[in-house]
Length: 258
Ligand code: ADP
Image 1 (cartoon, rainbow, N blue to C red):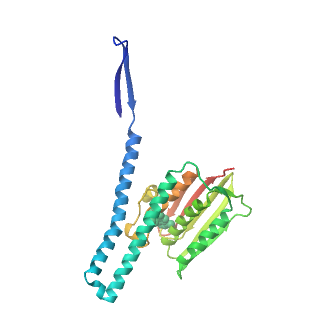
Image 2 (cartoon, rainbow, N blue to C red):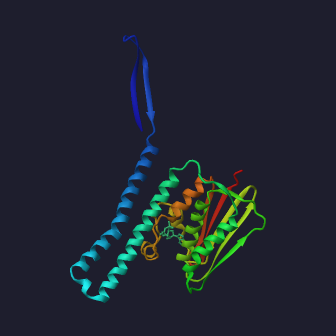
Image 3 (cartoon, rainbow, N blue to C red):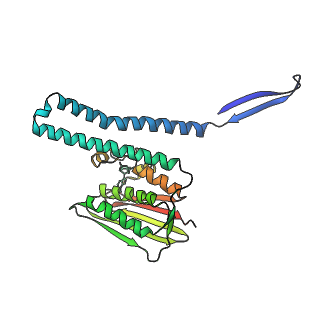
């Protein structure tokens, strides 16, 4: 709390009293801390792949390039790490773009089922020959949803991509229906699940339950934070239900806009 006190005077002589201004800085400090943490996290996240790239380039220049097998392995690592950097920068840019938005541009009426099928087609190649299947369950005759299609597509990509990353076998179900002037979207998987204690922090930037696992899967740690921002941009709500070893379900409720 910050307090200012100023005497209120009339014609420089008479003292009328004191003006007290009491400012609650909790929220401002909280935002400052969030911003500071974000900058230091971003710096760390960018530095890790970059340090690795520079290290391998140096080693190659110092002679490793002459051994074809070793050189190929190092180049593969450089390739993976630069892809990581690229994805991370893309996610940071998306997040700041969504954050700065008050009103959405390029808004139109879209069929959610169309968007869902586009996302499934896009992500299906990631399933490869695993024992994982994507199912879709869409209510008939749903009204169209007023949105920026790219934004809703990104939300779905992030959720389904996570479901694929954190599920070894079984299925992923993407459901949507409309009730009481709200669109409900659910993404459910039969994956590793999330322990209760992690759920409240899941949407924080760079929060991961298992850092090593996320890194191995090529995660940036920003996917769910982007999802949450998009949901908030559309005045919606997001909920997570999960059981360790059984699976996870993300439920999104978006109010209809006319
Ligand atoms: P990441 O890039 O690490 O996947 P996200 O922000 O998308 O970052 O997710 C944050 C963390 O939440 C992940 O690191 C993972 O631990 C957990 N998580 C997200 N989705 C799922 C899921 N479907 N099943 C299990 N864990 C998940």
